Length: 232
Image (tube, rainbow, N blue to C red):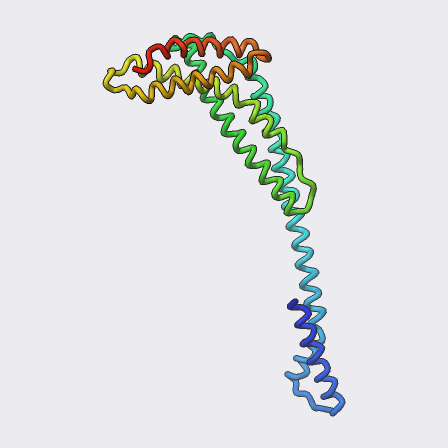
């Protein structure tokens, strides 16, 4: 490398100086300064390398501490998200599409669901970033498989509440807007998609979450009833 080439040049020049010494060559002051600089060059390079290593070690220690602090915050975030997701097995409303305060609960819950989904997406990205840094620093990778498990567990809850909110809002628009404003293809496609979603969610919760399953069943019944109006 560069240092090997430099050492070869220094050795070559040193031999030249030894030859000149043997010939009793009278050095000028600049020659003397250059010669002593040459002798001190290996030590100077070694000192610079040691200094750089110390700086790099200090920077790595800073990065290690910063990452550990971030990971601790991340663990707290995942604990909070896991608790939120677990609480959704008891979240429900008295489903009656288009009616009163219960639909406000649906709207507010759907908005909360979207916020949790965003936080879970961010968490998955952070987990990957932490693992990449750990590879870079040559340390064992932290097991963040719980992030994917939590996100997966939330999928059916999010699908149900978002579908409930979308169905309620769209249904009110479709039943009150002038007929000429409706897009039959959009209506049919949306209703079919919602019905399939709620059917699938119901299958997920049928044997594990009876109260959530009951709510999903009511939504499915309303969708089935509304399906009789489409195609328009």
